[in-house]
Amino acid sequence: LQAKREEVANQKTKVEMKLQAVEHDVSACLRELDERIEGLQDELDFAEAGIAKTKESLSVANLDANGEAREMSADEAQEIMRRYVQKIVKLKALHHHREKRFAAMEVQLHERSRQVEELQQALAKSESDKELHGQQARREYDTR
Image (cartoon, rainbow, N blue to C red; front, side, top):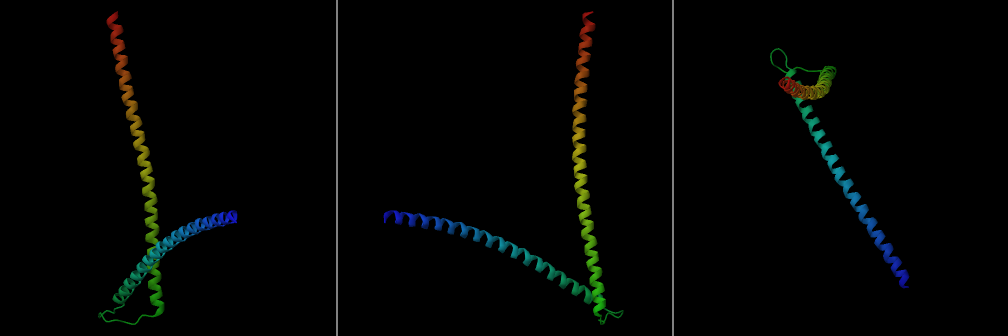
């Protein structure tokens, strides 16, 4: 009976440890989900702000020569949206291209800085070797 109690106590301890591990994993998952939801909410807010700004610009752009609002067809609205999307895609591509170019320039700058440093070290060594040889030549000359 005592052995059975100890076995049940051991099983209970193992189950409690597994439960704690599962609770920890669940907490981590919940935190991650909260962060993802927060990120998605930020993206949604950004998209809604963009939509509101686009609607505002469309309403401003949708004025006739007298400054009065005119009707816009769905096709016109789609065409304007298509142009806006194309412009955004082009700007993002340009931004990406410039980031890559900037990174390449940084690498090139680092490499050239390293080369300059190596050349300065070689020059310093050459000057010290030159001075050493000059001193040796003077000593040989003086000893003659």
